[in-house]
Image 1 (tube, rainbow, N blue to C red):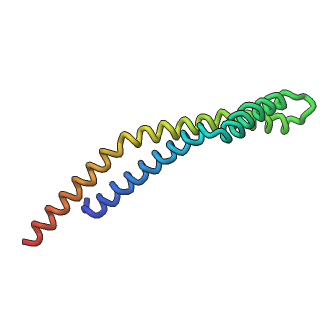
Image 2: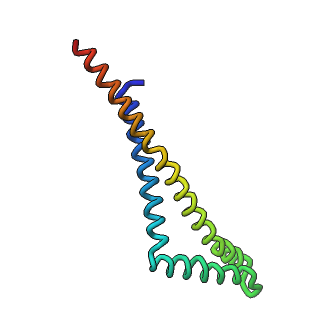
Image 3: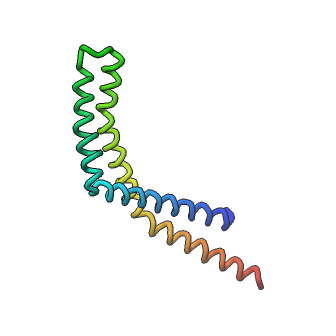
Amino acid sequence: MHFASQLQQLEQGLAEAKQAVAIRDMILKLSENREFKKVIREGFMEQACARYARESADPALTDRQRADALAMSQAAGHLKRWFQNQIALGDIEAAKIPDWESEIERVRAGEDSENEEGDE
């Protein structure tokens, strides 16, 4: 593999790892935010989704309305799982960053050696 393309791939991998870590950090920061707790956790994930769960069993609603209510009641679980997955991915990628950086340094050092040999 050519040094430039290998280096480009490594730098892209490092950038993606750093992005995953940044998202993880934002989610963790959000989860401690008072407004987030009030609006998302309490208002949506607890109260609204519980209301949707009750509506999903209401015989006064049409089959379609009950199905929609059931799907909405599950949204809190999907959101929570997405947050957990993003945090786990961020943790994994944070552990890989030193390896990405070391590999980039190794490739750059090899490229410098090649350039010095070519100058002779």
